[in-house]
Length: 145
Image: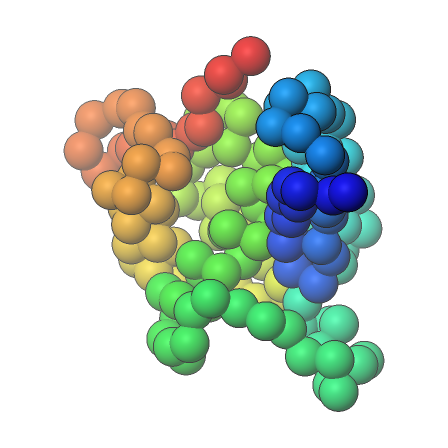
């Protein structure tokens, strides 16, 4: 009997792990995270974007946690759904680096200050860390291995 289910949603993809015990979940969590990272990286490197998916399959749509339409909200969504899971922030990245990667992935060149604002929000939430002097921050996710 399945007692535990862990699901991770990345854009239009959902990855799940089902187990009968907590120990079994913990034993297989690294495999699930590795699968999510690999799939996310492939999506990003292939130029996949959720906008492309929505235009090709509008009836499917996307379930997102954020409801707003502002540019910062869009940047946050792409950062959370595509760049963070792909391992983009395994190295310290500047706002400019992030902005260029977002353009490559989404086809949209977001305003630099909106990307910077979104990175700051993720820093304040504890998702990202940053180094460097004010005005020249670089954001990263620490390696927890």
